[in-house]
Image 1 (cartoon, rainbow, N blue to C red):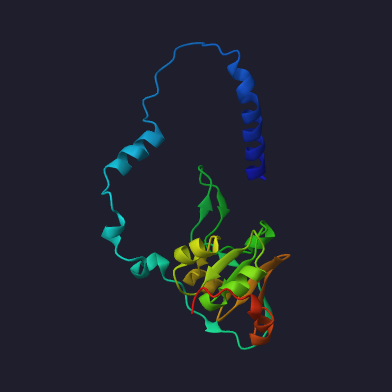
Image 2: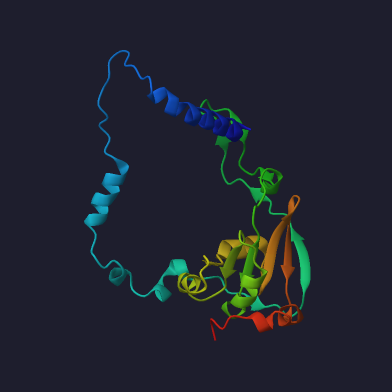
Length: 207
């Protein structure tokens, strides 16, 4: 509720900003802004960096941030549901010390938010199948490979499957599509028969 109120206030301020500029007036004392422009500060910092930054980090294949969580291969179709309960690891209090939610409080985030997209999780060899199955807003997550390079080749953003997502959803095999149904997540695993009908459309991206 507080978030919606803030958004409404910001929209109201934005709608009034342009007309206000037509008749501005100065009342009282003014002071110059001493904080540096954020964009100028970023550009100045960037100019101090080496021209070839990639050389300092080595090949992308060695970056820990690019290492996807591995999964087995789905042997059969299976559907299950998950309620992604979350338990607070610390107290949440107001500035005056009033307790809002204590450490250990458990809740289901899907009670308050809705996922606008699905997660399509695949091995790189099934990427063609995933692109056929994925809707424009869906996130395609890979269990291996260079997501950046493959994304450039297929013309669509690709991501890696993180260990925390794998553990949170209890994933063991792929391909799998995760979607929201009410206050739970539906995890649909696709076996060989489900994928064979799409085999003719597979993109020969990774051999």
